[in-house]
Length: 294
Length: 325
Image (cartoon, rainbow over all chains, first blue to last red; front, side, top):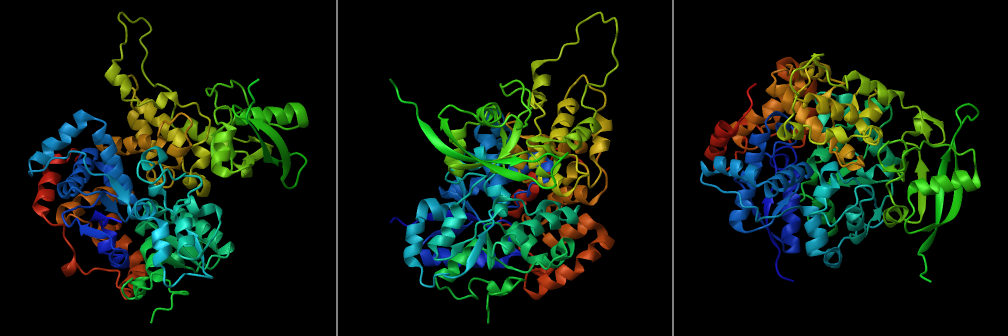
């Protein structure tokens, strides 16, 4: 197989509040022989909030990020669902509206850049599924996550809106996603069947309405727990922050203890590939139930 | 003779009568279904051939009245639009037919939609204007002006987005995607004079635009593909353009991204929370900040990462900004 090479757009959280996501992503890429070139020039995607304030500014900043992947001639890979959504939305709008693209390029020209539309944008999960292949990953598993029930939590911004996301997510169905569950199985684990796997964690209203946020993540997490999940796994660091860091508030809101370890997607892959827990940053996870990090 | 493709399918159908039943139950019905049949055809067959007491709303059969909206395996469905075989492709040969919100079931698929219509009424879903009873010229709306509405006027009020919205599900105050789509439909109408009044209604935390969780369930659920969340975003932008935004935590959060990006390129997460909540409000986050610090999840100000070529980002924030706050 030809060596896969991508431009990695880390997003903000992987550099700050979820350092374990960047560590584990780099660790498994190394182990699998995937080359990731860090896009250190990239800015924040606006996280769907700058988009509420200034449309032109958010388009320009996201187009600038894509320019750097285009310069490398590589597909941009994201490791945050919300980065994926905002980058894909920008790309979709600019690629289908010459007038808008010209307006954005007028701004970019001031800093010596031009958005062309030549790089695709894809979440890391789907490069593993569609480019690398789960069979290949399965053949490299040395420590199957056998006897562990893993509940996949997909996160909204990888699967909806499907007319946009289907361009890069292998046609994942928003009402019955399978990519993460199939990955769990490829790693030797038991994929937990539960209704909330494609639901919202509430992250984006955490500040203005913590009650809504806690009820949404609490309902999903209890659904996973009640279906015998030992752990949950997510491809999105924002879902991870919500569900791993906020368990105290969630438990209080739900009136029931909500206590379960949440893995980042590359942490789960890394465990099965036999990578040292420190390299996967498992010590950074707040809920350590069942992680046994020494 | 050409053979017609058929499949033997199992339907689990939600049954409940609020007047007589304590709990709902599901009828299991096996049926031969052909390639072209829609969910509405199945409901008709159940009622006309198997059980006349089965209740559901239906009227136009052409995807325009919005009456026959239900859920199939939790997927919001307009029964006269969604093909059964297409659903089988996703969910397999057992399909579960349920009303849009089982908690509001009145009889079988018929639900009490008063919560939906209350929200609709709250946004004054009509053109508010002073009418000249004896006009001397036509009141012409140009093509460009009409396009601002962005097809929001195609909404058929089926309720699929509203009953798919998780924010509505956990917070009965929240106005929801349908009323917000309607609000945009009239706020983008050049003939309308109630723009500011609607924006005032929609600014409140807990009930207004700021409680959208950005899950895109509404965009996925809309049978007319109207992208309700896109309209919610347009309303957000309009509050700033019209200088109607309040000084609350959600507004500060949206604005704070600009300042944080200008300073570091990538976010300063801690500073963004402080800016959004204010110096006193931020105190309530101290317990989680301590838990995060203990796990090495807080970056100290002196170690804050910055994007490479930050000068470019600073310049773009200067020249590409279109909104003042």
